[in-house]
Image (cartoon, rainbow, N blue to C red; front, side, top):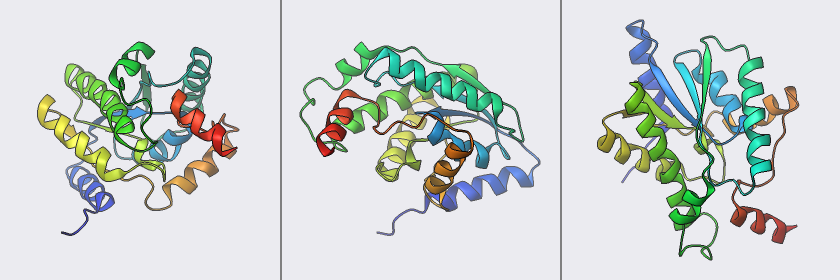
Length: 208
């Protein structure tokens, strides 16, 4: 079975709407400002984007606020072709811990992470349906440590459930991750060295 080319699918969506002179609305889940940087640079040319900052997995209130403030600052300062707005979701860490209950000792990148991806994408899909967005998607696939196929499979399933189109993507393609690091340096961004949850932080600390 051939592996899907999510970047090609994204480009086909962009070409379709551009040919009709359309600028669809997109609710973009963002895990942090650095990961959103390239995605906004790329997609704000073609979509009217609202960033949905929803990350109840982040380990402390202080860390959450640091990341949220950096997301706000980047949106405010970045010269997007089409205006970019922001919705900040609730920081409900209890919901995250309930979601991953029983999976605390599983390895990074496994079933616990999949449950966390779905938690955040489900909330995004709910907002997208409620507010009438054309599409929803997430910045998470920009990370070399994130499985784009898994993320897109979750997004496609939720799209069916909520009746809102999911924008298939793999933002690490076309040097997306490299570009995100360059933009982060240009804007002097706070760039954390772990995913966000207490489990990823413990793993990072173990590695030194």
